Amino acid sequence: MPGFPRLSLVEGSFEELALELATYLDQQKGEGSDVLSTIIPKIADAEQEGRPAETDKDAVLESLVGASDVLNSAPEKELQAAYNLLIHLISQSEDPDNYIRSICLNLRKPITSSPANNTGIALSILGTIFNTLDPDDSTRYNVLTLIIELVKKTGNFETFEPQLETLDKWIADWELEPKDQRRLFTAVSDTAAAASNPEASYRYLLKALLTLQSEPSSSEARDLSLRALKAALQHDKHFDFQDLTSLDSIQALRKSDEVWYDLLELYSSDTYSDLQDFKESNDDFFTSNNLSEEILDRKMRLLTLASSAAHASQTRTLPYAQIAKALQIPSEDVEMWVIDCIRSGLVEGKLSQQKQEFLIHRSTYRSFGENQWREVASRLENWKSSLVNVLAVIRQQKEEFEREKGHDAHGSGGGFRRGMGGMQRGGGGIEVD
Image 1: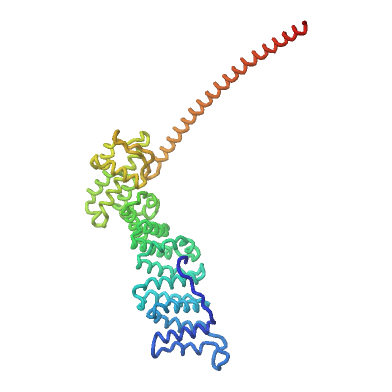
Image 2: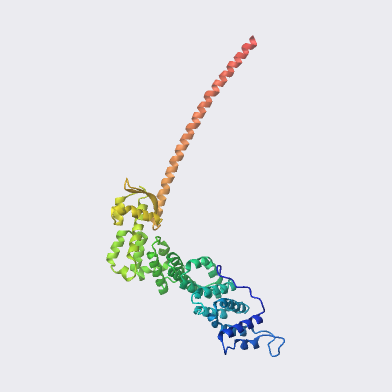
């Protein structure tokens, strides 16, 4: 995984390194530890009788890995080197997966020798394991889920996020089933949320939801759909809800959770006034579902202003009075709300205090359906008519220019011929003389 330390260079044969690590493990475990004495009979040594001709690597690794939990209490300056050595030995096994799972279980536990840097050390070791495995080895998936779990504890998602740029490729390499993809995306979403990154959290939550579109009415799809909907509503910078309304699992809420679906439709196309009617009809809905009324009111006012600007696209202006009425705000607050809407990227334009109106340069449609396509068709037709008129004017100007040019050419040509005639007559006179 990019960004994590890679395995340090380790020199020596498997047998030499195994004996070295076993000796170290015995030292850490203390009196009565028998790791070294257990693996010695399994290590090949041609000079001594009674030893196997070839080392039984798996038998040796079982003993070493079985005793490796003691490394969590080893001195910090030695701990990572010891784990690196163990990982190097495991990489020489034909089937390292089981050993890696055991190491991951160790790293889930506290590293008692370094309480302050506990998680950082574990992440560094897990990064080494991840990079040691082949890119298409599905064991990487288990390592990555533990890395995500530990990143969540540290709250350091911002540093970790760039590593996820290749997440989709990893998933394809590992050929993950939809349920495992969902587990991974949900874990990333939870980690981003814990680090106060609602945008990334929602993005990965949506990825998780996409894995359930083949079973949109399942209980899991319903739960994840409601979670995604709530996240979109509560995210103060999320204004486009078409990413949700296009999903089958969200459409299924129309039957299973009608009130939630009604709320989604409000934010997809309706106004601030409609939201107030909704709150009157469902007076405890926001409170019971832990929804912030302040965030939702602000968002709907901005969306209402964007819709008003879109509908005023023909006149290109919105009077302050109309904005105040639509948003149900005092007239003196209009400019503040327009500026907020511009900052949110929903509209572009210029305020005129003198005319008490907002001049619209650009507006955002909240949904793009049949009506919007009709408007686009109408605008294209208007542009077409305008271009036809422009072409007609250009053609007329060209014809007039050609006529004037022809007239000038005819006038100057006649004079020239007359001049020539005069010269000929003059010439004839000269000849007479």
